[in-house]
Length: 269
Image (cartoon, rainbow, N blue to C red; front, side, top):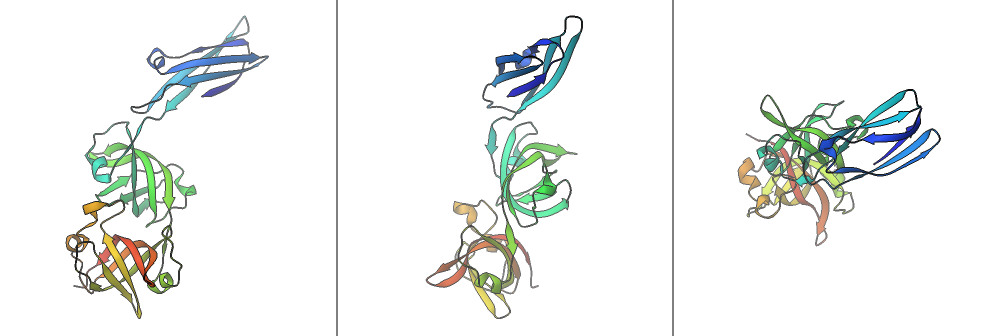
């Protein structure tokens, strides 16, 4: 951390609060005329977010001048599923969450719902949301604190780390696309068949167009046995309208959706 100062007096001194002296120190002070550069050294933070207020002093011999700045240092970031995040206590600890945006309730502040394979959490705003170009269906990674409003858990003070855009497309449009494991589509179709097994292999139909989905998993981030049983757990059946998120792939020359993520469905009955 470097502070650049313009001094009305001669030289500069710095006060670091006692409660910050264990992790923050001054590494150098350089003064030239009315300018000063103060360099600080901060120890690595393995705990919660911490901050302190630093005071700068200078004097012209007859009058003293002061200025203050607040320094905030992020702590260690805990990678967590949404289920693990919701089970945590309210604190200033930082959590990294990944999932699919299922709803945006405030398009200015970025209040939204985020879902992964384990659950869904309400995000009370994302920093600079209007500049991010995010929409429902996009896959995002955010960092935020475990907060609560009226005892309802939520993500607070969130900021975006990364995002994967998801494009809505018909089955016909997906069939015309090249295979690409890094390009994701949101596809809706009628379930025309469901294969045996636990991983949700099924076929989607839209008019005369069909595509096979090699796997349908309960949500983003599922691995191992967490990928199983979406057909049973969601009550999916032939005739339902199913919306999934997946990249296009091929197997033995036949196009397919690879590892689809369940988004929503409408029952036929």
